[in-house]
Length: 335
Image (cartoon, rainbow, N blue to C red):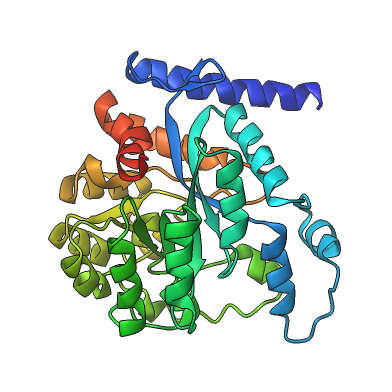
């Protein structure tokens, strides 16, 4: 590593640790002897099987080699086994003083990859998995993932897989998740952009009309103890997400990604988003996340830095920040 990169890495680590020190000296989480507390609720686990699945989705396959896809067309690191990829993630989290992260199996059917990461590093990861509830095996996959593999989060993408959140195919998944202790359902609402699909020229014709947070009404009311997590503050359906969460105290927001959807609201800033979310649903239902995914980029530091800046600009007290960055995630997914 060049001296310049080492300096940048050092500055990031110092910035992270010093930020916590300025907030509250009692905020502690031991990771390799460092006092930190960040828990990231949104990291994608781009396994080798993830890329193999994308290859099979090509209408006219012109790239048959997985390494060619990753290195030549994407410029990313090639993942090896799930175990080694989980090691890579642990090293990355350590570099940035992140205590724990939710790893998302980012294509339907990749639950075993994340399960392997959990077996190898059970204290560092919480397992989530993408599910297409329109498939005939969706219920059996859900039960296996939650009850046998030890995953805790079911991820639904209605705009991608084309169903309504109040359809029976979706409601049966909420019912299964509600029957499992410490399980949650992650529901991607609003605008949906999957960068890797665009780069590989895969279909991205998502019907965002199907990702309306208000369609969570039935599931949230039927299962009031089941945490339902809406990422990216609703990704453009911010008002609808606020309305749904205001009505149902089991609906949470994750704060992840660059929140580029704000461009659809010209007068809105990230500070405004946090302020309104805190006003309507409070700090207890906000989960910090980055939407990190691939290497060599690794943990998406600019997202953390931007949110840290928003916390500072809003003058949030240390306990509020601690809830967002650590406590809420720990409360939902503690063993």
